[in-house]
Amino acid sequence: MELGGDAASNETSLPSSIAIGVVAAGVIILLAFGSLFGMLLPLIAAGVALGLTFFGIGLLSHAVGINSVAPTMAIIVDWGWHRLCAFIVTRYRDGLKIGVPPEEAAVHALNTAGRAVLFAGMTVCIALLGLLVLRVGLISGLAYASVLAVALTMAAAVTLLPALLGFMGPRLLSRRERRRLSDNGPQEGHGPGFWARLGGFVSTAPPSSRRAH
Image (cartoon, rainbow, N blue to C red; front, side, top):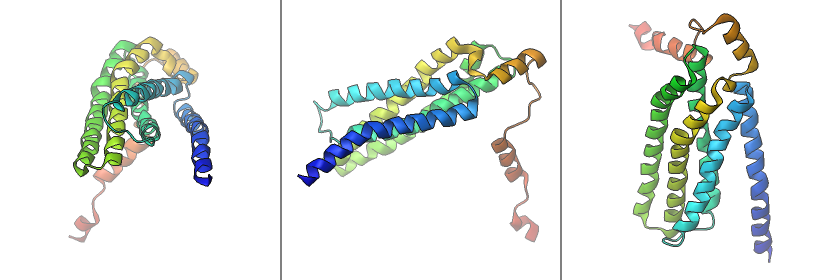
């Protein structure tokens, strides 16, 4: 009886945990982008991928054994990979800031960040499929669900998201950024971000071993 109560409690707390995660992710993206539309697009893409993942897990369960934990694992994987959609949106916003038309900015974001998303996603899928070698039913079911979640998130990131980017256009920039772009024109000379500056400093700083010589 106690076990049943714990299971029911876990199932009840899962939707609230998802809601808290979505709100937290939305707040972080909103603070980073300063745009409501910029916040919504990665969440929409991840939400569509998650819905398709649940549907796919239901179909897959008729062919292979899928543990009841698989949907929870799919949620964790999907909402972890929604940051890849935010990566593509960031590249798109950078293109808009330097005066690139929305359509070209979407293409450039897909050619750069989109390729990185595909490469990372395929690497993770191959690693997860390696779990099938163990031939353990529970692990195999989790591997199938996780691969499906990653694959559908990748598909949403390189198909649905670029279409939404082209539709939204400059509205993915904050009001201040759009005002600055309208008043001052393209920001051809804007400096690199903090992480780019840090990476440049680390790559150019002489290592201690050289100083010793």
